[in-house]
Length: 283
Image (cartoon, rainbow, N blue to C red; front, side, top):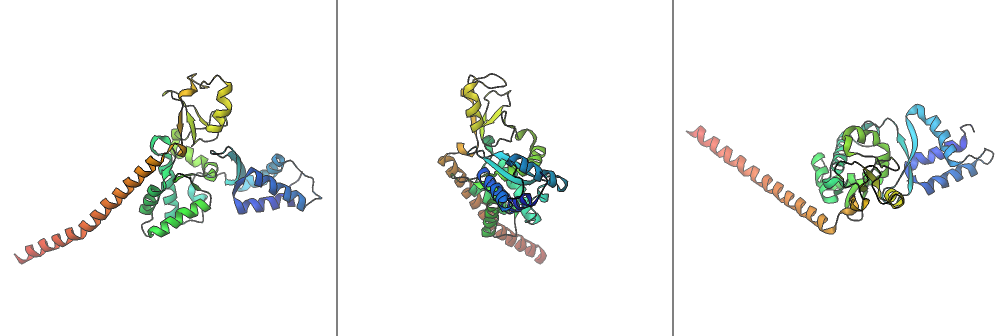
C-alpha cells in the first residue's frame, strides 16, 4: 500500500507523544484506519514499515523495545543519527544538554552496575553543572527530563534512563561507554535492569523477563558458559534497599555541610589575607 493520509495522521500523533505503549500505538493505528476508511487497511508492522520508508531520508524511525520493568513493548519516534545528544534534545540549552549528559554518565557508571542514581545525589550533581540555576530551577529541569520521557524516577527514589533514552540514544551509549553497555543475550536490546552471569569471564546479561522465559527451559544454566544461573547476579534500580537510599542521603547531607563550611571559611581567609597585606604595606 502507498503512503497516504492514514500514515500521516498516525505519524502526527507519534510526533506529539514521541514515546508510548504498544496498546496506544495499536489504538492510534486503528484510529488512523477508521479516519480514512477508503484506504486499504494494513497490519501494524506493515503500516509502520511504510512510514519508516518515508522517514529514512530525514534520519527518523519508529522503533520499539521492551520496557525493562514490566516487559511490555514501547514505541518511540527516534533520530537514527543519535551520535550526539545535542541532535536529539533541541528544546534544551547547551548547559542543560551538558547536565543531561552528566546525569547519563552517572547512571551508566553507577556503583555495582545498577544503572541508577539516588534522586538527592542526582539533584546535587546536576546543580553543580547548572551553576547559574537556583536549586529549584535545577529540580524543575530534572522534572522536565522526566516529562519529556528521557528519565524515570522509580518508586524507591532513583533516577534511571527511560525507554526513550535507551531507544534513541543507543548509538551514543554504545559509542561513549563501550563494554559498560551490554545487549541482552535473548532479545539483543540494551540491558540496564536484569541479571548477569556470576562467572567473571562470562559477559552474559539478560532482562529479568527474558531470563524468566529462557532459563527455566534450558536447564537453569548460562547459555554461554554453562554455569548455573541460580548464582546469577541481579542488577538495576530494583536491588536498592531503603537502607541504601538513606545512606546515600546521609552522604549528600555531609557533602552539603562540607561545602557550606568551605564557603564560610573562604571569606575569613580573604579577610586575613587582606589584613596581612595591609600590615606589609604599613611596614
